[in-house]
Length: 463
Image 1: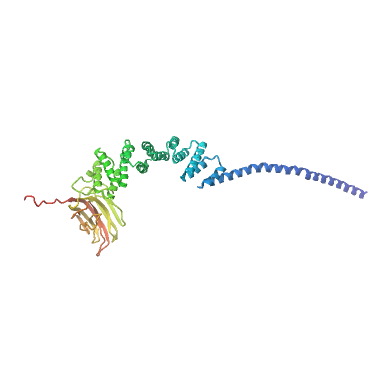
Image 2: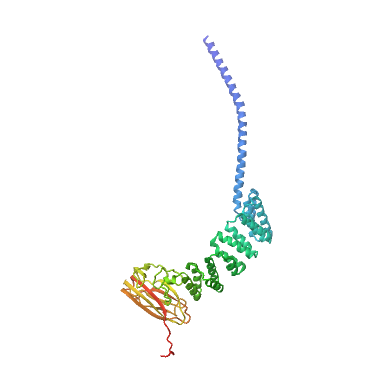
């Protein structure tokens, strides 16, 4: 009995196992088949858009890379990848225009028009079209295109400038002046390039002076034009315009006249420079502040006002181991004097302060100053020096040097200007020492520096 029962249990177990095996086979061969199809469908649904995205990204990246090329063929490939991008058409148009050939200029105009058709509100696209039209000889098209560019960007100075350039190259002076006024309103520091454009385009300084610089142009702009003319060696015309200003008793800051004055000095027009200086300082009352003694040819000889470091005032430059002070209260007369401190003993040549003074050729002059010193160690002490900057061998003289500690004392010297000397350089000078002690240290003061002509005695006059 027992064996039979065991056998039955085994059969039942085998039957159960067999049923489970069939169920597993059914699951293995039916359900996985549907799952694989679903996975493939899912993969296709995901991969196709991703592939398009990759392709679009690759196309955009290639188009952007090729857009930076200067090769027209490469740009055409970029346009083929991204034909709806107006910037690509504009860039290709610019490059084709640079070739300056009739065929490529026509192609450039076509590219600009395509860019405009895609974005008609871009001033730079219209400006490009204007250049292409001008290059092909179609001036009405150029005028219209540049006009549209300015309408779209009325506050952009670069657009106003390009419109003005078109006016100049197409010989439209009045229109050019109008557009350049707009340009200067938007970019006030563009005066020099404006002068250059009008002068090179039309060669007529009166167009600048009477049209561009007519009221309400400020006086500083007019003086800048005089500076421009002087820089281009047109001294005659600059002098004529200067005479107009002075005839009208025009007043302006000294700083505004300095550039023109410096050009006159640099080119040897000393008499004209002296006239500009005299008029300007008198209009601003600087001659009275500096002392007001018109018989003294040295300007600001008492250092009563701060030097301008330009024109016919004192000029100065810092040098190693030397301190300058134009406001020292230790004065011989007045409220101020000039002091130089030699802070570290050195045997160096010093010429930290100088002034240009107009003189008359052949005239004899007396130079005078008051000097004070404190512990000047060198036997080669500071002094005043006079020389002809154009001919050093013609005139080079100096007063006696000051050494040790001294109270205020007068130093003088006389000299005669050479037959061609129109300007002298008057300076505070310390030459290198030649004998012991050579190194200099200490302090020195200068005040009441004057230069006056010595009257020539008439030998035929009755006694």
